Each structure stands twice: as C-alpha cells, then as structure tokens.
Image (cartoon, rainbow, N blue to C red; front, side, top):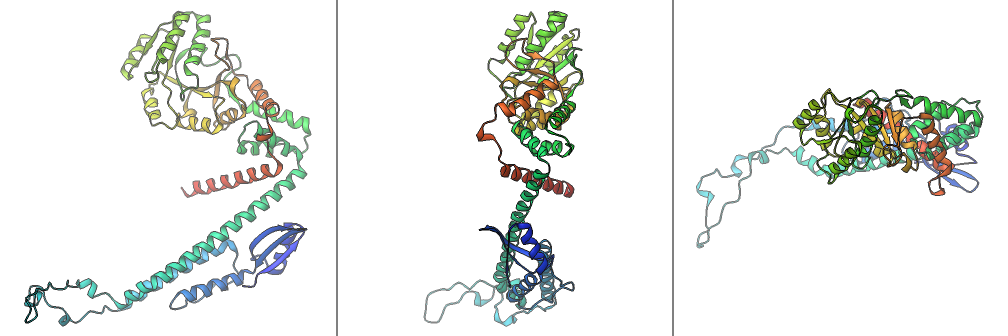
Length: 482
C-alpha cells in the first residue's frame, strides 16, 4: 500500500491537504502531533480495497470476482464491504458442496456385523483379538469435498480473525480522530461564545449532569453578557423546578401518605416533622402514625418516641392485612403517615414493597437524600417509580456539598417537590420548597466549595462533553433498534 505522509500547522489544514490529493474517500491511518504542527498518515480508498482483494484471494482456493461497484471506498463503508464479501464466499462454498456427489467406499472392504470374521485368531496362536470398530455408514460416505473444506477451515478462520482485527483498528482510529475533531470544535466554540463555556463549567462543578448542562448552555442567547447569562440561568432553573404551590403542600390538605426510600434517607425523622407541624395546626387527634419497618432494629422505638412527644399513638403493621386494619381504624384522622422499611434501590424487595402499598387510598411520597451521588438518586427514582409518586421530599440538604445533582434529577424526571428537610430538629428543620433558595444554594456551592481536585480544565471539559455526546448518540441508536 502506498501510504503518504502529510504535515501542516493544524489538523484541519492537514486534512485539507489529504482531501485535495487523495479525495474524499481517503483513509486516515494515523494522526499525531509533532514539532511545529500535526502529521497525518493516509492512503487512497482504492488502494485499501485492492489490498483487501489480495488478502481474500490468497486465503481462498479460488478468487471471487470483484463486486460490480468496485469504486473507491471510505473507512465507513469498508466494514460493510468485508461483511458482504465473506457472506458471498460462504454461499459459494455451500453451493459447491451441494453439487458434488457422495463418494461411498466399496462394500467388500467391511465385514458384516455378526459374521465369523468378528473374532479371529491366527493359526498357531492362542491369543484372541477383538475386531476393529466398524466405521459408521455416515463417516464412510463423507464426501471428499467436505474433507477438503475441513482442511481449509483453519486458513479461512485465520483470515476472518485478521479481518476482524483490521476492522477493530479502523474503528479505533476513527474514534481517536473523532475525539480530536470534537475537541477542536469545542475550543472553536469557546472562542466564539465564552459565556457558554463559563455556564457549562459552573453547572458541572455544581453537580448538574452534562446532558442538562449542555441543554441549558445551548439555549443561552448568544448576545447575553455575564450578568444577563447569570440571571437567565437562575430563572431557567427555578422555572423548571416543579412545586405545587409556594404556600401549600399535599400534606397541608391531609390524606394517607407512605414515605418510601432507601435506608438512611431520613424517612422516620421526616414523618415526625410533618406530623409535628400538622399537629400544631390541627391538633394531635387529627394525626395517625403507622410504621411498617419491621426489619431495622430500633426503628419502631424511634417513631414511638416521636409519637409520645406529640401525643400521637404509633401502630406497627407487620403485614398487608394488618396495615389495612389500621387504615380502616384511622379513617377519621385527617393525616395518616406510614413509615416504611428502608430498601436499597437495587434490592429485589422494592417491587414487593410497592405492591404492598398499591391501595388507592395510600399515596406514595419518595424521600431522596440530597447528599447522595446524582447517579444513586437517579437509580432510586427509577426503582421506586418516582414519576408515578405524589411527590418528592428532599432530605439532608444541609449535608449536601453539591446540591446540583439532586435538583438535576428532579428537573430531568419532572418530579414535584413537596418539602425540604435540612437538619435533625423536629419540627423546626422542615420547610416548604422554595425553588429560588435551592437554586441559589446549588450555584453558590459551585464557587465556595469547589476545590482544585474537583475543578475542570478546558481540555477535560471538552473531552467530557464529547464523550457525553457520543454516549447519547449510541443510546439513541440502540433505542431505535429496539
């Protein structure tokens, strides 16, 4: 193959030289930075096709004719070309085997079963010899062409492995080139729109996901200055953070609610806070507390302690029938809260817990730990079917170093925030959701608490966003296949 070397100051100029001499179907074999610029090794697509034909001809007993559309070929179409060529070769070999007649051995070469030649002894010898095993008829009738194909199998398999290795190298080179082009495109965009770069860096350092950060940055008006961009970002986040009402939540109206979530998110303390504030307004006789946590040691005692302080009795539901009896007993109570067992989002018992609370009378509320990783919060929402819940409570806001991850999950899943818990005091640390306060807290933490170890450089930011775009594109292609 005639590999040519091109040198230019930038990768874009080098690619222009490649296209000018070898055409649009040129195949880039290597791209590396050198002193003073960039060096690219490339060859014409026609030479790559000719090399592939020579390899296939050397591995086969007969050379297949070149395809009718034997034109220049790019890296993108080479994989399809090799796959079609192998399929065509296998089809020809199968047709050749089907046309050849079966060759059978003469019947006189084998003794029939049960004859006197099954066991024999030479004259003058007392030794007895067992007969050689009879050759099965299907093995005796094995065609010569099939034996010939068996001898050729290692060679064709080796050729197939070489082709797969070549395809893997081509895909790797194409991915490396795509990464560099994505980085160049990113830095070019940063020079044109520095406000977009600042917004992306700030959102990522605050804990927001790359997908939501890219979406917000892409919608930022190009003519906005730094102050206008800051105001626009805060308004966009506040507008997309859902709440029912600034003055009321679903708990103020009463009803029967089950608090769900993994272990340690603060379900029991949250139930006590909600019950305490409701009892202060409507009296202790209007509140009912039920605990279904029969797994954790001391869970029932904790809620009973809160109930004694509030003057509200606490009942333990050991199974579904007992829970139904307590709900029937509390029909006259305005607010009934059910504290459930903490089950991890990857535990198989999550489905059993949701099925046990499938009554139309019980509304589910998901409690999320704001200090958890954004990926863990996302998994919890999916496992507990958060989109079908009556709302979400955000707990341990005071412990969250980066609040952006929790807000990001609420925005992307379109969940309604019903309350915020930011401490252990009952009921002082229970608040109605205020989107503006939460957004200000999340964005302020991006500057005040970001250390050098968790900050992004320009090159790292470009690679992160490029990888995110490739992952999103791959998932979209997989969804289309399904």
